[in-house]
Amino acid sequence: MQELGAGFFLHDLGKCDVPLELINKAGRLSDEEWQLMRNHPREGNRLLSSANQLTKECGLIVMQHHEREDGTGYPFGLKKNDIHLYARICSIADVYDALTSTRAYKKKLPTFEALKVMREEMLQHFNKELFAQFVMIFKS
Image (tube, rainbow, N blue to C red; front, top):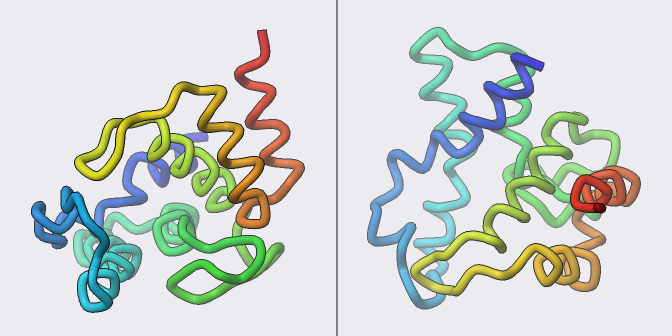
């Protein structure tokens, strides 16, 4: 649990080197800006490694939290079981957080709406069983 928590907490560490105006940009990112943003998993891995703070599990979460079940993620285009379980869980939580948080480029969604978007527009990105378990967290 400690490794899982540390990885979740540090998964976007690489964004420290992404200019704030890019992170908060209201419009679409250019191809060059998108490439810079897509480099944050590698940069986070590098930062943790250079600080001698990179554990195996944390490294997997940092590097794989944008990988998708259907292979459309980054930085490696991994699919299904090639993605570590912790990174699969982090991916679901990360997308949920992005949808339910106010950002410069969008308003936050209520929980039900966010889960609906994830189910209807992004389900191919996630392990279906893990997503179903995630949804059950909000049941009550």
